[in-house]
Length: 321
Image (cartoon, rainbow, N blue to C red):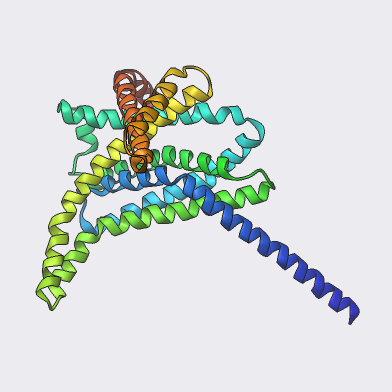
C-alpha cells in the first residue's frame, strides 16, 4: 500500500509540473502572439483578395487550402527552421527576413504600378484566364501561400524573440501554439468576411422585420466595397511590413543605419508636435508611412530586376527536363 501511495504521489507531482508547463506555454504564447499582432492584421487584410472573382461555392474551399498551406508553412517548415537557426545560426535570421521583406515590397509595388500604369501582360493574362477556373484557383492558392510564408516567417520570428530562453521543448510548444492560434484567427476571420454577403442574402430573405431585411440588403451591397477596401489595405500592408523589415534589418546589421535613424527622429518630432494623448498614434503613423514609402520605392526598383532577370531565369530553370 505504501508503494502505491508513493507512486500516486509521484504521479501527482508530475501532473503539477505538466500543468505548470502548460500554463507557461499558454502565457508565453499569448505574449508572443500579441507582439506579432501588427503582422497578423496585415495577413488578414492581404488574404481576401485571393478569393475575389470566384464562385461563392469555391470561396471556403480555397480558404481551407490556403489555411492548410499556412499551417504547413508555420509548423513543418518555419517552426523547426526558427528553432534550429536560433540555436545554431542566429545571424541568418535577419538576412532571410530582409529577403522576405524585399519580396513583399516587390509584390505591393507591382500592384501599385499596374494601377497607375495599366498595361497588357501576356503571362499575367494567361494565368488569370477564367476559361480555366481550376488553373486560376491553383495559381491564386499558390500565390496566397507564398505571401503567407513571408508573413508567417515574420510572425514566427517575432514570436521567437518574445519567448524567454528556456527548454527546447517549451520553446517549440509555444511556437506551435502561436502558429496554430494565429492561423485559426486569421483565416477564420477571412472566411467570415468573404461569406458575409451570403449571410446578408439569408437575412434579407428570412427576416420578418423591415430593419432586418434592410440590414441584409446593406450587407450584400456593402461587402464588395469592403472587399475592395481590404485589397487596398492588403497592398499597403505589404509595402509597410516589407519596408519595415528591410529598414530594421539594415539597422540591425549596420549596413545602412540612416533610414532607421531618420524615420525614428521624424517620428519623435511628429510625436512632440501633437498633443500628448495622440503622440503614440502619431509616431506610429509616421513610422508606418515612412516604411511604406521606402517599401514602395524599393519595390519599384525591384520590378525590372525580378520581371526581366530573376523570373525569366527561374522559368527557364523550372521548365528544364
